[in-house]
Image 1: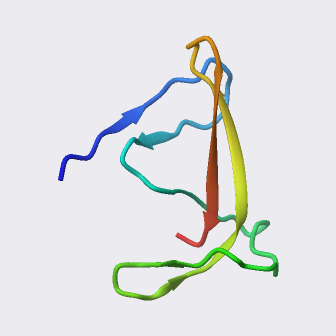
Image 2: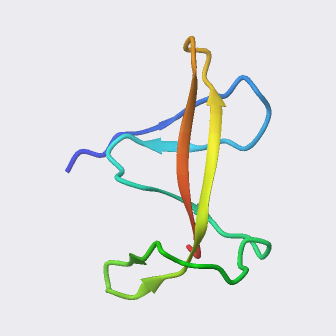
Image 3: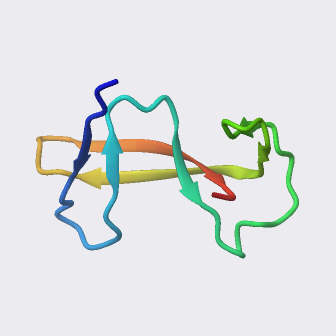
Length: 79
């Protein structure tokens, strides 16, 4: 399997992200502030079939200087 992982530099300050062009979902690690009870309609499972707790979605917008901004939707999860 050929996995393409690329690091992008955003023109605005903030955290850096790695983009896996073959990923079906993007996962963002949860913080203590994210870990509040909510309706968890997203269910993720690890390869060993254990459940991964999720805490909603996070939208990230990045300006990569390519004539438009890019938007990714991450699942906030306990990873």
